[in-house]
Amino acid sequence: MPLPPSNATILVVDDEVPIRSILARQLRTEGYNVLEAGYGIQALQIARSSPDPIDLVLSDIVMPGMIGTELAQRLMVEHPGIQVVLMSAHGVDEMSSPDRRHNVAVLRKPFEGKQVLAIVQLLLSTTPSNAGADTSSDPLTS
Figure (cartoon, rainbow, N blue to C red):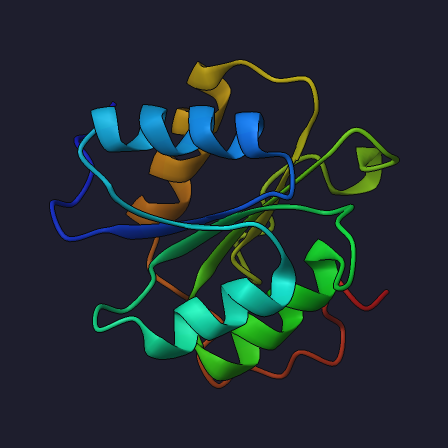
């Protein structure tokens, strides 16, 4: 697998601290810059205030306050081209493979660390294709 870009910044969003901590530690070990948020509004605040652009968001779907799909929609509007990996144990079969056109992938829990790294590397290695694109058929709103 290719090495991660040395300047890639990943925002990990999960309300379960142990899961968020494990993912963040694993990504840091692989050389990524990692920011952490416990819920959607906090993730938006971090994304808006980060001095470095966020390249990818790894977010749980089911969280209190703002669900991960809403967070992803907002981030993709505010940061065109951002890559998104949504994680859930609930009904994600229809979106289980990467949607390169919309820079979105979904991981079904439970998953192994190597699966996270593989999808992160895949999305970061692709050229963002949704900057300025029509998102009226966005799978997140379907």
